[in-house]
Length: 335
Image (cartoon, rainbow, N blue to C red; front, side):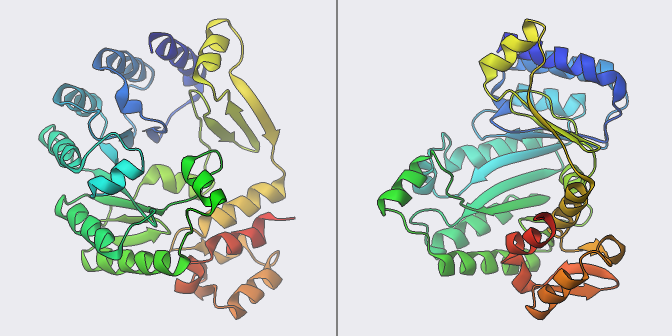
């Protein structure tokens, strides 16, 4: 961990003179597992490089990896948003997912964060889990709302290769039920709308004014810089990825080498197509001038299939289009 932090801060020092970040997001694995002493080193380095804090500063956490000292350090240093990987409020399902926390630890962690002064909390939850019943999903939504998060992200389980669920699927022991998943998604939308949350992106819901500006920047095609192992960056038309393996990433930097493992130059068409495809994930859609006249024929076909519609000269997904968003996106990024 010490070597990793040393390498990470070296990468930051190289990049910092060119940066004026509008948001900072610690994500991906479990950054909250770092001990307080190392977090203090990272946060001190960020304060030195960026004396004006960004408007949004998020740390992703897993329950049971946060104590009061860590929470107070984050909040006192400028972290103003926490994203907690809850996934479910059913201990049996949490064990099935291989999560290390319990429902009791979820509620305890939220209490710790609130006591530290946090007023912008996101909870990540999942549906379509193996064996998950509609009643379990309804209970997860009920207990999620009882914690009064300002933001919610809800994702359907995706079967990724090289995972235990994928192997079960290959053996025929696991069979996704698309109708069941669709019913869960519809219940999610109805329940959160009734609770006052704005559905602003396919998988994201927020109280008014609490939308995640960091993720919106991705969907709007803004530049972003990723630091650390496996981090992606896109600046202009250049996109690159750091070495994924933490030990190899750390060794490369400490030995004076570049941590970049892969890079590509995006074509103008690809960059523009991605802007449209990702922008359509947001329920506000995209302004018409981005798609006229280049994609008129594709849009006419999507209109005929009731997948998109026009509203105040913005192209938006219809309720049906939300269910086929990947297919809609493919119309704009395949050449």
